[in-house]
Image 1: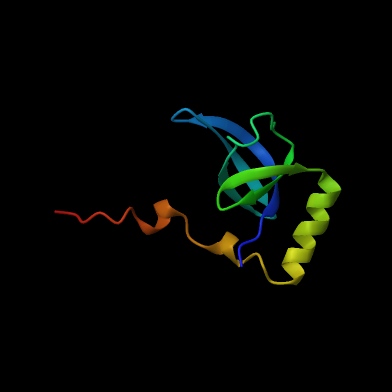
Image 2 (image 1 turned 120 degrees about the vertical axis):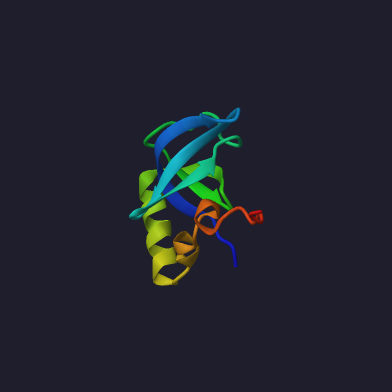
Length: 93
């Protein structure tokens, strides 16, 4: 099951014309696209689903949701390798 995970925006940047963020989930930081939530700023809490921030939430709601997902063992996808960590799939000559 894929769930949206709450995290704190720690950096906002532009990547090839797309508004992006570094989002902290507990002790893990991942990138997320902010195109659906262009008003998002550093310090905001967002729900991230498959790499896209889909909703803003307040800090208390983010904390409660994260804790519940942790208790239900639903945060394993945060430990999955990033695409850059597993390679781009191209064969080397």
